Length: 70
Image (cartoon, helix red, strand yellow):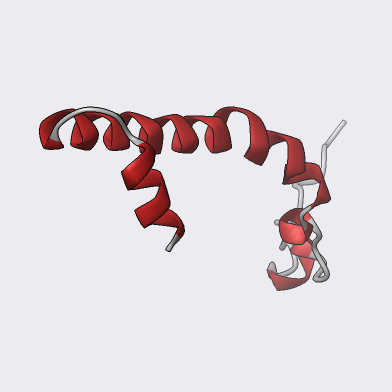
């Protein structure tokens, strides 16, 4: 329904309406990626780790050091 109302509000013949609809869609996508998503990214829990990242690594094995003779 809302898309039909937007389509009726666009001026011009069919090819002009299609071009305007594409430009409007690209403008909305650009707005989201350039302004909206960067603003809400700190509020999203995607970077909150609940697992210790070092827990999955095997323990480091150190080779014995040769003794220094003096």
